[in-house]
Image (cartoon, rainbow, N blue to C red; front, top):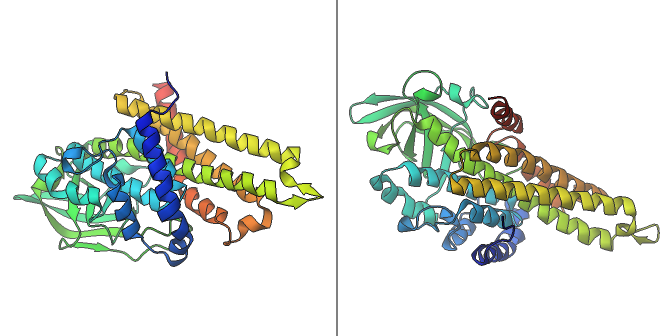
Length: 378
């Protein structure tokens, strides 16, 4: 059991931190204010290998481990949590094509996705199927050499802008065994989008409903076998949960760093507020909780890399704990800044708005508890 990052992983971390500081952080407030999707910044990230973190290298991916990827995502999220979260979703969708697509699909889609000349979205949630994902109603009916899709997906990151949509749709009976996974190109007749959602946070990435109305796609665009789609979706979410947990770690670390610097400079009652024991204890608790969350995320990533059969449960534990801790640490950092933390002149409020949704997406934290409890009681 070695808690030290390898030399290579530290090198990836250093590159990601430098990139986040140079290319994300200086522009994050502007992107947030203007609801701007920073395509060029994402392509610069892809030029460093971040567009296909754990995609195989024969199609342009970096071939990193999930542990390496979690370290990179945490570092990037320190610069702009919202943009990094989209990058993590793009990686999740691309990885599903890499793992479950045949060679023709892999070579058709992944070189452009890893370079982020094209963007990808993951489409599972529906207006009537959120936490109960297996009840989804979007249907794909076989018709000759293709499928015809009808239905809608909700809260889709990249919706309306992404070029490639990885879509879970029902091809068979009710429940998880009747679901299959497909790749749908933007521009396909019958594919349309709702208006852009007006959100509390995550404003540097587009979010919209994705609609299918007699949307015909080739049968060759199916990932895996019919009926395998729910398993494919859940395997994608294992990695996605690690990614979003890592995003929370990055935001929390950035805010903790700012809080430490602030309490050293801010003076009240004739001395720096960092000299008050109550605030010292608050900082100590923030650092301790954050370190515990980081270790849980790293363990889950290592278990996923090793193919451990308990990895899914560990991913659920890590996602629940790290996203809760991430929000609590950011919120505590805002409190330590007092009224200044509430102003947009300081970045803390943006981090707070961005991390709040991490407790909801990739499976709500209540559903993470369900997964853990079912395992305990099985």
